[in-house]
Amino acid sequence: MLDIVINSLYTNKDIFLRELISNASDALDKLRFLSVTKPELLADKAELEVQIDYDPEGKTLTIRDSGIGMSKEDLVANLGTVARSGTTNFIKALSEGEKNDVNTIGMFGVGFYSSFLVADKVSVASKSNDSDTQFVWESLNGEASFHVGPDPRGNTLGRGTEITLTLKEDADEVRERERESLFC
Image (tube, rainbow, N blue to C red; front, side, top):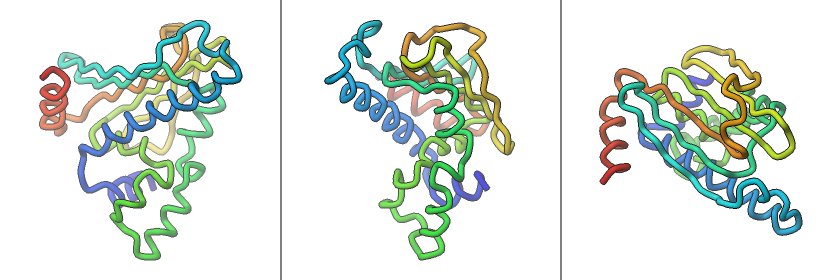
């Protein structure tokens, strides 16, 4: 199902980075909005930022934000079930002739899954202010399952989300473009 959704929606592999940065920006906006009435949400880390790191040796690309973060339950609800993130509505839109319509991108909550266009493995570490524990969600491309549990590294984020993509071998051109755009 995931393969059908991703390959029906995305015709350009580069879209994954825009989608992940957009999600990070949304997490910052949500925290900024909530901190207006609850300034203590920013107490541990006032900086609101998005960072992108590329590791050529590990063939990984990491997008990290200091936004609202997710609890274990949030990870399962938001990432663990494609259908809960809007796939039913997306499939309906496809059947009504909206295939590859740029207006459908971002509407169905499937933007995160575009990462599987370029990644063999996706790991999402996240820490919310509502939990003392940082959790990690992991899935391999092509598998219908995922794993969520406490992050063995402990609390490395303080607050926010870190998405690490282990890039596919055929993602060389994407890796090279990202490296050039990050360091130029």
